[in-house]
Length: 125
Image (tube, rainbow, N blue to C red; front, side):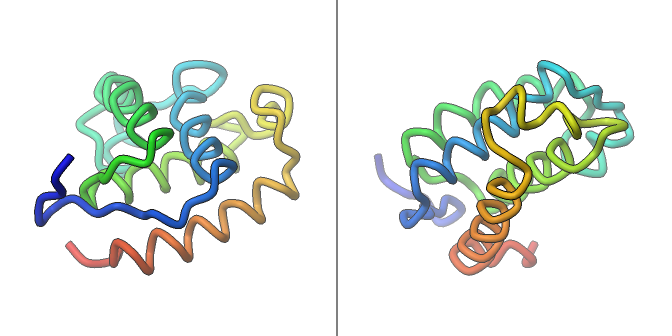
């Protein structure tokens, strides 16, 4: 698959990192409860669009496909919030639903933050 100028491959992600991003997106369709306002803050049109986009992004992330800067940013922030928030996200249920301890997830998220920000220049529009 050819990479367009808006698509960036983050090739050095581990299988574990890809799994955490994928699970983070999947959690929104399970124990997490997103509002339209929170979805908009994560740059999705609304909560329903978050679920649609999560279903589209998960297999792309798992298979190492390139994503747009916007999609990398949305996948990362959606995972950060669903992991950390007990109000909107999985919070305390994260380790049960994903199989990753909080400690392992924090380590993986920090690595993802560095790798994605470095590869994607995530803070640029």
